[in-house]
Image (cartoon, rainbow, N blue to C red):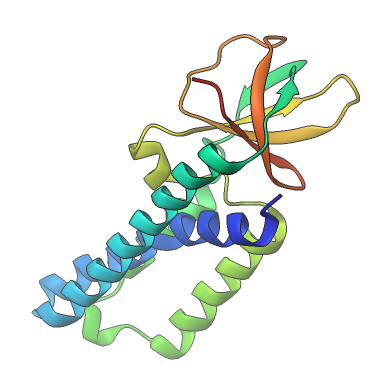
Length: 172
C-alpha cells in the first residue's frame, strides 16, 4: 500500500486547477513569466501523477474485489469549484492578497490530505479516470479509481490498494 505517496499525488492534482486559474489571471495581468512558471509547475505535477498511476498499475499486487454497491464519487464538491475560481474574482494578479490566499490554499490542501477529498479530481477526469464509491459485503466503503465506466455492482474486479480506503482498478 502506498498510502502517503498516493495521497500526495492525488492531492496535488486535486489542487492543480487552482494554479492554472492563477496562471490565467497572471497572463491577463501581463505577468507572462509568472503565468509560464505556474503552468510549467502544474503540467510537471500532472505528468508526475499520471506516471505514478501508470507505475502503480504495473507494480501493485492484485486482489480480487467484488463491490456490492457502486456510485459516482467525482461529482459532489462545489467547494472545490469555488476555490478553483477564486482568483477570477480579484481585480488582477497583482491585486491578489497573497497573505490570505496562500494560507487558504494550504488549508484546502490539508483538508484534502486528511479528509479524503481528493476524489474530486477534474484533471484526472480529463485523462479518462473516474472515481466511484464502492461498498463491500462487509460494509466497508472504498473509493475506486478506474478508467472504465462502471454501471453495475457485483462484478469481479482486480484492484490494488492505494490507501486505507482507496483502490485502483488493475483490470485490462
